Image 1 (tube, rainbow, N blue to C red):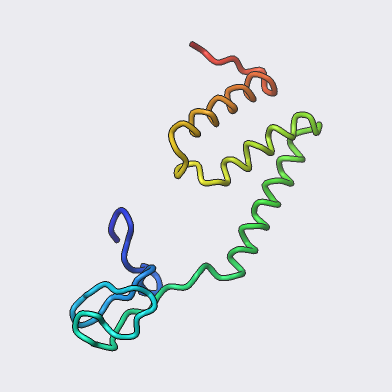
Image 2 (image 1 turned 120 degrees about the horizontal axis):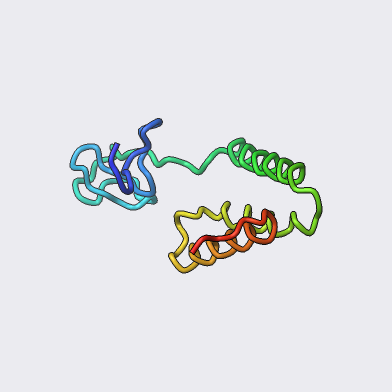
Length: 122
């Protein structure tokens, strides 16, 4: 496997977002039926979207996390900021800009001070 953006799925062997000619390794768009370089019909298969069951599994996982959050956090007043943090984390924290990461960090620090009573050390 390569770091960065891999060309092929390591599990099914299909290519991501492009078709690759098996003869000359030329990269073409998803819509082509023939290689634009050598004219070959031997193009790689395109990996499809995530299956429907996987989407359902993700939704069920977040309902479970939400259920645990409701169980651990007693009142709705304390639960609302916790829910906001869970939603922000679900937006894939690592892909957010640095400014947004700083805002999330400030919100988490505020929540630690207000809800848990943990003071930030300077």
